[in-house]
Amino acid sequence: MTEKYMQVTIHGDCCTWREVAIRKSREDGCAKGKNSKKGDLEITESERLAKRARRQKVALIRLLSALSEKPYWFITLGFDRSEWPEISVVEAKRIFDNFARGVRRKFPACWFVYKMEWSPTARYHFHLMGRCRAKIGKRELYQSLFMLWGRLVRWGSESVHIVKCDFSRHFGYITKREKWNNEIKLIGDAGKCRTFGVINRAKLPLLKKEGVVLTVDQWKFVRNRLIVYHKKNSKSMNYHKRVFNSSGILAYTPRKIIEESIALAVEQSYQDVR
Image 1 (cartoon, one colour):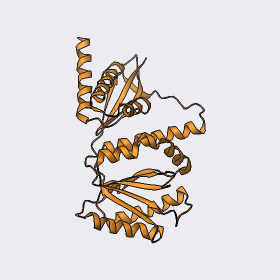
Image 2: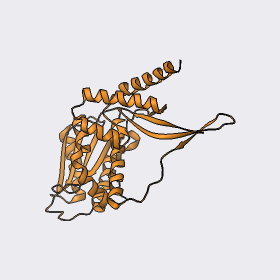
Image 3: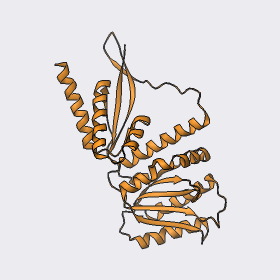
Image 4: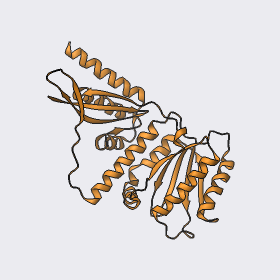
């Protein structure tokens, strides 16, 4: 006998979920979990790219939401058009990987989450959010990164911008809906290249991940309560609806609200049984 449940995982200020099937043995009543997700049917190339882009976006949101310490710096690295009239995604990523190694050597205690992007005007460029941990001012940091990036992209063609990170604003900026078509193109060009990742992952401050298995009715209660919360507190409900319904993730939700909703759902189900 098989029953359907929802596997809910809390990553800091966001939660993800997926449907699982629990197979119960008639002889001993033991439960065995099995992912109920079916294999992919034949899909078009555009659908495949969209699916991959959505997965990467969800992974990025989940990672940023799970940070226990907010980034202090927001950095943008680019290539000057006059010096780099044509550059491939592979070449851009190779240059950035060399830059990342230089950053780790220069600032051993630092951590940065990076996101590669493409746009018609800026073409391939990189955004970084993170901290150096060492006491360093904006001017000193700029000079260090300017030297590292300049050596790789040729002097005079470096493009480095640094500002203090406004986490909610910059989080929304690198994940906003308006960038979706550009993201699809980037994924198509990138092939096996990663378009986001972490510099110095060992230093990345992450909250502990927690998981719980709920019945379908319990999950419906939690889901509805979170939707009500966002209707009251979110200025961009359309974004949350899209993320909530299509990607199996809800971000920008205080961990306390998620935990309270789960606790109330479990308590209500116990009362119904009684």
